[in-house]
Length: 95
Image (cartoon, rainbow, N blue to C red):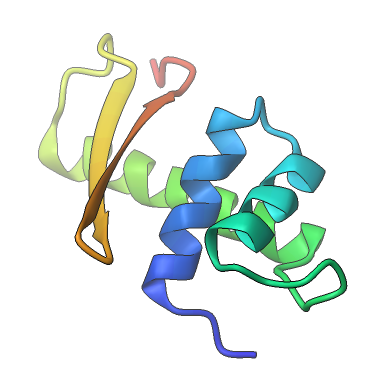
């Protein structure tokens, strides 16, 4: 199945909201997109890849823009089906 940006954004947000639990993220995904119990959802490898890609993007943005790395909190807002989702990501300091 081809995953949309909405799917990826939701998974990343749900992963952190569920204390980095892949299984809880998959359950939240099924609930959010009204999928059945045995419906195909992103697997562990895919979820962790999306998380890794996000972290790499954040590191690139911090390095390329010179953002003060003593600030380790990044807030993102995504809009899906006219609902705003706010996620708070905290990463280890880069310096």
